[in-house]
Length: 164
Length: 164
Image: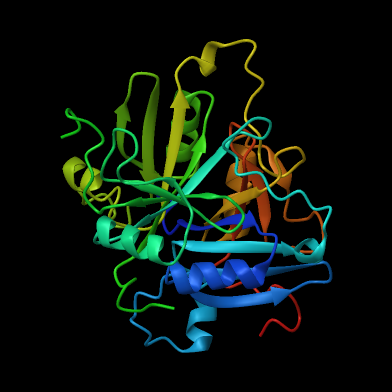
């Protein structure tokens, strides 16, 4: 519950590690439609901040960058330099299987789930759950380049018959 | 980049599993100031949806619930029934150590990081990184009840001297 001490708090970002930022930034911008707000290179790693630009492209690059810690819905990708070309790198855990279970997924709300999924199929995106799989026919799960689960949901979704 | 096919997409939520929802929902509402938008019980698990209510408490319970898949900045907690009282349950992985490295953290933007951290200390919240630890003196990391890392950041943060 909001109170005077937490007024102004925002759920700013979620961070996941990625093997190859060229692949991942391309996926999140071109397939999912996010915008790269900024990136910053440290000695051994680089951070990429992405989010949906709800201004319809009207924000300047500086305004996009300034928004990275001042809004909700930001995805931070951490690239530890070298993983992209390290043949011995086993990849990151999705968080959905033992050992390492904890994190589950991120979710993208889309106006038309069927249209979005048809486009993902056309683009060759792997699915964890197609709309026709399982009992929930209104949601799908796709996989990002590292195997993280991404739920695709409609803005209005009933979780069950008594979820009114 | 936004295009006609991804217009209206939103980064809706991030899901993590929690051992005991009584403890976790209390933490995210009372300590971090989120609002429980809705919860829904399935046979073997229950989902809790939380987010910051930026309306200042003006939204009705139904409006809060209706917003759960139609906004950004939502946190979904999944409780697999029984973990809260299962002495053999080893706990969930934070995603920050092997095996299971992948997911990193969520981040909360706060208007005054020093004041927020002083309050977290007063409330007995464990820290992964206090403001005085390490080289970045403007950010802290606290731990949620399951040990997930939560970064505490100011709305304006420079990542390094050349991050202008």
